[in-house]
Image (cartoon, rainbow, N blue to C red; front, top):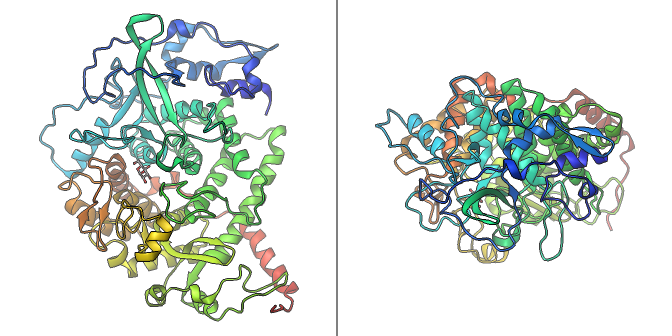
Length: 604
Ligand code: GLC
């Protein structure tokens, strides 16, 4: 990465001590243009008033700069930029006529749009749109995201009053499909600024490309002016999150949304910006960095994705692998060719091939494969062992013997030496279809399994986050006796309405939209009556989750995305990746070669 790129990508106030950009002069005049606001907030939900934050690390409110930076040109170490007054138009240049979001303009000191007097709504869909708009978070008057949950009766929202990167994805897509692009564009550019944050936990800094799990817009007193306040973006990279979990999925989702934004709006100028290109490369570099791994899958700690608590998914969880594969493909499509990135593209291509081979071969189970595992020989010392990971057949749990249908299959949750996690994880399997990590045959088989296990996976509310739940001793050991993750609750076999949107994209891609339509019907029966819960409990998803938030934004947005996609299935293309012929060729060559060299194995 050249110095220019680093500097363009790094915000003042956010300079890492080791960043080469920290020696470069900043753009002048930014403080003068900073947005000021008075302390009187129009709405008590609007981030609960100004607070003092000792030692707060924050990006000052300077929305205009996001676009100014794109116009910055390099000239002997200093930055030249367009006239300041042009900047006031920034961030508004992709607004489409009739756009509703952000139309209210600035709400001084307020980040969540005050709820309009709710009119009589005509349908679940209308109510969902009203709620989604009410959840919009503003920064300096521009919409930048959606709050995770927006329940006016919740007196202790914890961090659910923040904009989560992963939670915003269905919100962003719902807005894109509605032709409202501004909020997505702002979200992409503002979270990009946060990527370069100097982040530390107990003196340790994670990699530079890490995207935060969430961020909050705070209103704080302006230095040296008692009567004025300013808005700042305050990210959480996991250093405040429960369990201090690393949000590995954030950057991957960011890349996926960036591509969807370009495809849907036709505005490729965002992905072509130097700072955005740098952001993509930083995420890739972090993911593709060499380590001790023997596998092409991404090695992560427990709780580094949607399941952000200890659930025994450390290692190589499927969800991360599917998002990783998808993000690699999306990034490859968006990276502008330049000499400096040839090595990165080569590494990316190699990883794509190795990753798809690894997942398709070793994560796949169906009736036939299970039978093979059941008869595995163990302790094979050789280069071409059949049981490469030394899986002991006793690991096949009794539930699975009964559960695996004669038609259908799925990718297991995780693979480690001597360990296959046979739990079915919905998001990882669905995103494997969407990203074409699964072959066409496997994709259909996953959908066959969902259909044949409908009463386990959908029942009274789609969709089980994973199946089955960990119970008794397993629950005690694997979750650490987590009272939130008791069997058939929350991450441990709870049902999450937001997963409907991923199910919809996957079933439309495989030309089987009736599956999603059937699930949507189930959702519509009760989700609005139940006040849009975050998740449901019990084996058949009969109860609203014990600790589920109400008016959970991604439950609302997930429903809206499913609804819109089923009306216009063609648009789902903005989200999926077609099977890549180069990868396919490389895999079939690999297999042919593999057959030739197959040698005798040794049982030690
Ligand atoms: C919970 C979920 C996580 C989500 C967050 C905000 O922690 O596990 O996936 O992002 O809530 O809704």
